[in-house]
Length: 281
Image (cartoon, rainbow, N blue to C red; front, side, top):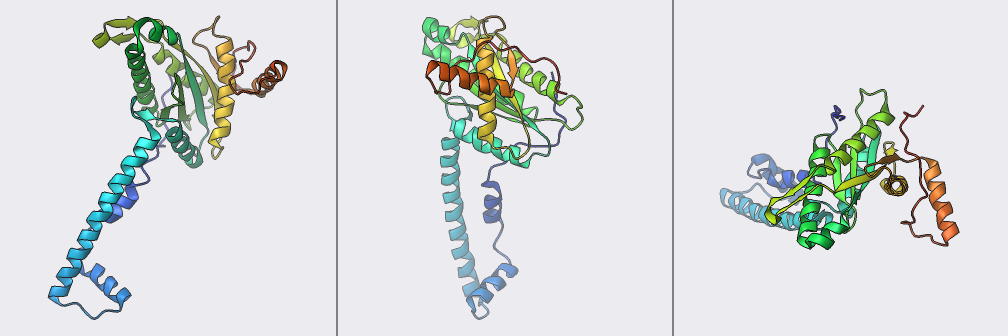
């Protein structure tokens, strides 16, 4: 399985630098002198200096408290709290930031679980929820070891993964296919739900991927990965853990299928499509 040797790191919280500024000590003569200059105030006495420190410390504590509330609200809005992973909003935002700052192309893959509905039907929603939690954690760990990100795309069993590609590979296309295939392999490993008394071997995943150049619009790349995923779903009967890489033909096929069916919904299935194995020229 491919290992990423790039020095890229996942995006940090936008609140970090703000918090660092607020956390800095205000109890120094330079700060007092600057405040006095801006307020055109006379040199402070020992008493007024102490009052100034007290007032500024109070305001700083209020600001830090407000920052905590804002950061918590932002986290809740961008994460799937049931799975402990980015939701679609958070994934799109963080992945776009990673892609915008990337020095190399990134591989973006969208995964869909196979045989997930029967888990809910036969064992109940508690078992289905436990599987989704395990899926999320496997993708999260897989991404973190490769300086990437993972997220849940909606409320179902569809997940996204973005990984920066290493600078030392001369077979970019093959590396991206291997990276997505490695993630699918991890998702197909047995699920030991000991607390519920289940051991599942029927879960697997198919995936569609695209190679996104730096500063590509993330939503555009997601559409391409979705197009490839529809091809992977169409191949599911013969190759249940297949990974399909996007080509322009996938887009044309989906649009043509939609026109013939009178359906323009983005989940229109593709006709069977041949999996791409060879590296791009």
